[in-house]
Amino acid sequence: MALGKRRREQQSLLVATTSLPQSPGHPFYEKLNRLLGESRFDDYVEELCRPHYADGQGRPGIPPGVYFRMLFVGYFEGLESQRAIAWRCSDSRSLQGFLGYSITDPTPEHSSLTVIRQRLPPSIHEQVFAKVLAIAQEKKLLKGKSTAVDSTLIEAEAAMKSIVRKDTGDDWKEYLRKLAIESGIENPTDDDLRKFDQQRKDKKVSNDDWHHPHDPDARIAKMKDGTTHLAYKTEHAVDLETDMILAAGVYPADEGDAVTLPQTLALAQTNLVLSGSETEIREVAADKGYHSNETVTWCDSVGIRTYIPERESRWGRRWTDKPEEEKAAVYKNRRRMKGKHGKALGRLRSEYTERSFAHVCETGGARRSRLRGLGNVFKRYLMYVAARNLGVMMRALFHMGTPRSLPAAGKASPCASSGWFRRWADRLESRMARAAFHLIRPPSPDRTPLVPRAA
Image 1: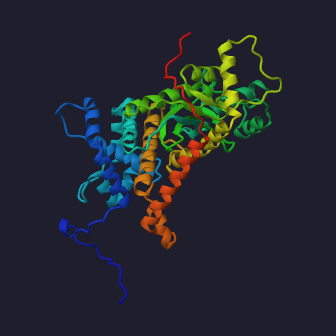
Image 2: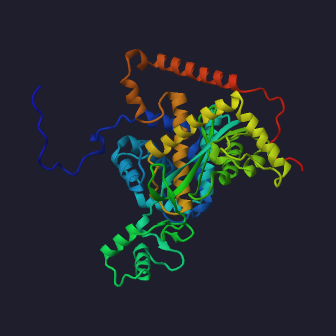
Image 3: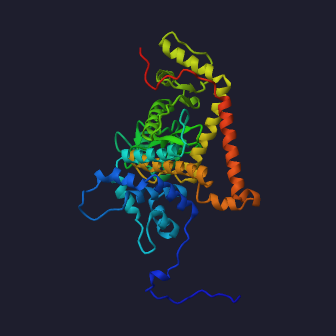
């Protein structure tokens, strides 16, 4: 074979479309398009978004199905910004086919994503998320009786050096200058301010006194790696039987876990109803950060059995100044946590919730938000979680959860890479998981509905 040489002269700008090379497409995105087409996803979102567009006036905008598909691409390709999503879709021929564009059509720009996101309210994104759960319900991949809840922090698109005082509007440097002058330093330089800041004690930054002028919804929080950033708190409610995320809430980072748990459970139950499922949440497992008398009592009043460990206390609990129903609910939760079922749910909770955060935040590119404002962050994050649910369905139906999983499966052994072996191994694994779950699940003949009990 002769050595090929790269062309160095400019080719003709006039090229016939018939002579352009055709991309065979990516098997993952082709099967995902087939899955969305079977459920009439595009017709649903177009009818859902119709009230937010002019009726027959103006230039036709970008189809809503393309907008949501581009957000799904952001998760599957691990992209965290709109510019990266727009560039990736315009650069890949397989993604152009996934969006429904030919090789001669330009794909949407990143500014178009901003315009559509500002046009559509959060309720539209919530209904699209429920539509993805409805697809899982049609494929019998949604249960919802046993749920696990956990939270994590994501970085906001705001820098700590840009925070200002709420009362005076001074930035950090001006605040230090005033403190240095009060301590007796006249006309302090930048070096004097650095030394003064290093030597002074009780250097705490409170959300009550400081905020970011361009992102007031972000809160100062300490991340898991020990650093301090402006952040948001995200919370997942995961189905312990199917690994589907039933709800994903975005809250200010300074809100406690015990405060947001009822909101997330109510949102998960609402999504189950919108997806066409008649299942009611019966069990919830969480870590000890979610334990409080009010939270456990609320769950008991709506018929949800809690499996939440208590914080360690040196002096025990005092019930003389608390209602009797709080004491009964806390003691029930304590008794359930000592059983085998409670311990098994605790292990499943740590596995399923941490896996969901690893998929969405780490490999999915949502650890840091490139948008500002609680509403904008919630819209983008919810669609990334919906894409993660689509990946779970793709793995169950076609044995590929991400576009990168198919080449990874091809590098396995010849026996493991064969189709019949993968289907047999996945079927065996799912049967063993269901059998193990039902073995640890105690019988519960009486099922109370998810409504508050009468006083």
